[in-house]
Amino acid sequence: MNNQTAFDRFNSTVDAAAEILDDVEPALIERIKTPERVHQVSIPLTRDDGTQELLTGFRVQHNSARGPYKGGIRYHRDVCLDEVKALAGWMSIKTAVVDIPLGGGKGGITVDPRRLSKAELERLTRAYTERIWRVIGPEVDIPAPDVNTTSETMDWIADEYGRLSGAAAPAVVTGKSLFHGGSLGRDTATAQGGFDVLEAAFAAAGEKVSGKTVSIQGFGNAGANAAILFENAGARIVAASDSTAALIAPEGLDVAGLVALKTRGGSFAGVPGYEKKASDAPLVEPADILVPAALEGQITAVNAGAVKARWIVELANGPTTPEADVELERRRITVLPDILANAGGVVVSYFEWVQNMHSEKWLREEVEARLAVTMRRAYESVAALAARKHVSLRLAAYAIAIDRISAAMHAGRATLPGARREAGHRL
Ligand code: NAD
Image (cartoon, rainbow, N blue to C red; front, side):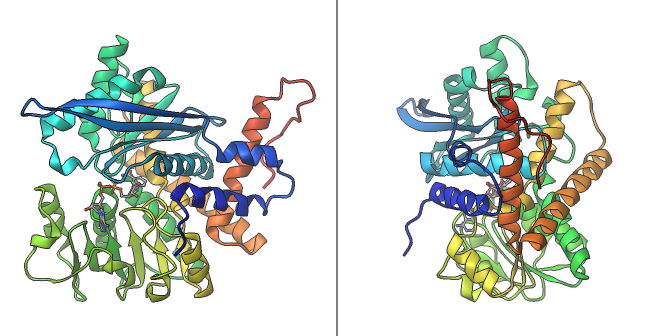
């Protein structure tokens, strides 16, 4: 078994993509791989029964060459520094692939949020904010939701940040509720962006979403919204899982019913009437399209050979290991990589930030139209480079991002004696 960590995988993909570029300096690649700042904090939590616990949290500020750090906050029992560093690195790459003026960061708390009450979650979030508020800010580092954090979590952070800094600044986080300055379309943006990218790829391949079968791992913000979008486009969801079980239904799942169940806090293990399998079963169920929308490291050397889908839309971050990538490529399965396919969330986060900074409110149609253009443009440049260099979409996307980040780093030191001036992008 390969015991590469998520951050090792990020680094090896950056190295592989750098080889596609003609003249990028090794020292710049080292800087692109290495986080600029790493914050580890201890977070005191008072439980509802008055007992005290001390938890660990992180904020990794990976790269700011192209703009303020940007990236979600995850609450999960497996959160560790290595994972947060990988997630932060992927954000730097992602914001560059879709060409928005932001860098990459990520945060997290090592905690199983299911064992906490809502009041405890709020106290935990406010205590974490107290620890990191001096290093975040609307023009410094802008967190957002990720696994097990929601618009309500972001509202708490914005409120606590305002209280501590003495100035209301809703643009300090994105993914807020509409009432507290969130953007229309942010809740569905990650799934919508992935769908936009798949449609662009399908258009190029002469395929249609209508009539296709879809299998989804993870049924949270990314996975459940993807299920709704695919169903609305005439596809059939034949398998879906949450962390408790997979539901299998070749004739199609009742998507609306399952979304309502998850909104009520239910879990798939308790749903009657469907064949049930383990949570990772959707990865290898027969379907045309596979949507990993849970956690990283799911499609591996062990199960890649058993994947039945011809198309994979990576809504999760880092769901496929490099060994699995090789096997999927050998089997001519098209992988729409995370750093492109799930970038819709950060694109609309950027739109939310722009609206907050300029006191604007955009219509849902405006948000969705701008998102579709951004995603299609990103797909087209990635697909063109992949075709030109005979590499995967993932390596092409990384290469474009590395090129843009290194150009920004050059521009940043253009005032130094002897610095090389970069005019635009080379790819
Ligand atoms: P979420 O907390 O809303 O949902 C996560 C879902 O995955 C839940 O249904 C959970 O039960 C399920 N899950 C957890 N472990 C599982 C397992 N082992 N097998 C099957 N299901 C499992 O989180 P989310 O925001 O939907 O994020 C999901 C993935 O998408 C993460 O990798 C995240 O980093 C990525 N992502 C999210 C966004 C966003 O805007 N929310 C943006 C980009 C990427």
